[in-house]
Length: 158
Image (cartoon, rainbow, N blue to C red; front, side, top):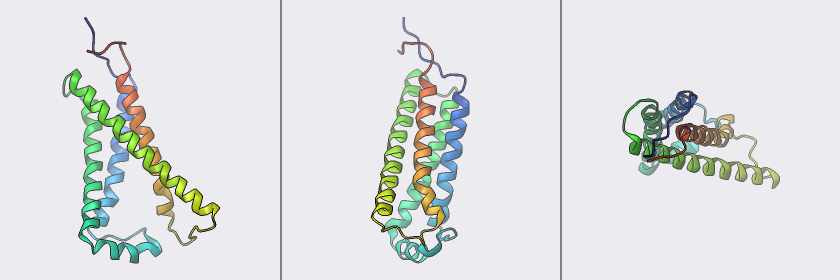
């Protein structure tokens, strides 16, 4: 008989970190979708032009809802909701989110580094935009560790 893996004792801490990261990620997207511009500096005019396009507002709403879904995922993993099969799917979703966030952040950091090396970096770029790429990497890492803490426990899974 095989037994389901159980989360490690640090799993709730990582779930809380993921939920916090996800909610902080969602907030500015909802703010921007509703017309907010604070923190964009010289990029505000470009944001205004982009938000006049329906797809960009939809993008921000979708990103905000993905953040809420991430927080719900973390909550579901801290609760006793669902059986072992559901927990495996939730853990796989966390791994998928980690991979997407890490790839997005690493690609962005690479593009920033290339623009700096080629002396094409715009010094007028607001600090908030420079924080975005590391924020994605941080999100990927906390999702990854959350998924790992969910898989610790007994060596066999059913």
